[in-house]
Image (cartoon, rainbow, N blue to C red):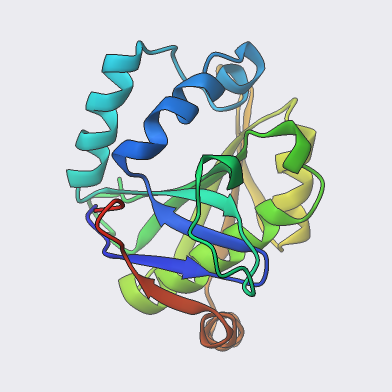
Length: 199
């Protein structure tokens, strides 16, 4: 999905997955544990480059790279600030406002700092306001304690378990109260234009 904005929170900046992100992203995805937790297959660097282009143009996917980048940091984001990614998938043909969301904090040094939580909430706020999402769901490996804990803390409720994939599914229904709370999150965030290198 071609989204022409960056989202700046208190400590995170979400930037649409661009060509300059690919090399580091590819290094992350050599980690067997990350592959298992994200139910991903290893790709060559060329395949990853092709995937980045495909995902950027696919109207059913929105992929943002999570940068550990504080609001008061005047520098541009760079490879050193890359921490992970957050994704939206619009795969429900019957309900285009039912959206899968996932988060990966790939950099071990940046885990446990609340960056994933802030990124998910910021992404949810954007999706509700700009895309009309009224239900989020997430599929999480049963051994991924960090993600299970994160989504439970955010108020997601367990709604399914798929034994074949050893995955829990959690959902979050957007009520008027949640919509108002997420609108406040977006009000406090900064929506920034893309630079030419991000396009």
